[in-house]
Image (cartoon, rainbow, N blue to C red):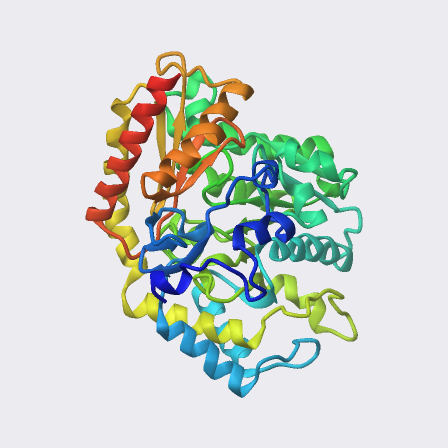
Length: 467
């Protein structure tokens, strides 16, 4: 597609596309008043490698992989061809007591990648549905194994686990939950692993902070009563709030606590799986084996939607007998075209060594972004692999953050647009303290790290001058 192909900017009905967007498009997590009042919405028309292009031909670095999705980058003809071939052969068939070859092949491959005895793959349409599935499985498993009172779930402060009613109940962002309450009951919060905002006594002791944070999980389970707690849901690196990495020993202690109290440990890897941190599953990067992994996004690099809940043999065992059934499913879960695309995507990742590329280059990416610490507005640069958050502050010495109005003015009013105008698509996020999030395609290297840092430096310098 050339720029000339999109120059008319009209729909097939002849309507100006911006006007059609004003009249008909309901965007996700979006404030529509600026568009309704005559503004315009950025319209992306194509992608190539680690760049995307808008309808005026401008090029942007995709610093967020779309939405933590495009591991292998944009414009991979091999993945489009895999979709075409599968659609011609078998475009659709459900997994409701039937199977098809792409789902069987992909299930086997994911089981081989997964640690321990996580050998049972339940396909969904995306990440939120995978979390929803894990929530339901945890409750039914405990009922089937003689613990019907175990229904409560523990997650961490500020964590995001999806938008379906169950997954949203596990999510720990009050602003996202309030409009839809009452939600599924029985979900509780513990502190996250944001060391930058953690208790002052642990400022210089990562391991002590990790133990302290893990013990809050034990405390919550025992306070609610172990006989009532079904599962703990945690991301390997927590997304919302800005890339909170686990302190040394944290997940190992959480694993011990879950085992002590017969509580399932769910590793929500919708973002972190498939090389984002390094390994195919990030729990291996941090040395723990959960009972369930939820995943999606990078499995196909976004070329077709799919998700999965991967459960241990132990959790599947009660369903292997008699007429016991997990009465749950999705019409498009494990879609044959999506499964075929996932297989081709994973082929690319293996062939090009992208997992090792992240492990090799992740420290350089962090070192490059850490140069921004010399700016007065940058309080913390944190993350690992190809997944980073940059927290913004009013005062570096006191760590004073921005109030709600200031944050809205800084992030929505300036930074999001200024970064995009400077050629970088990323996320300026106010779920918690204001942060800029970066999760580029796994194909980039030092030249792109430098380019991203320079764009951020220029825009953040201007942002500070405007305060």
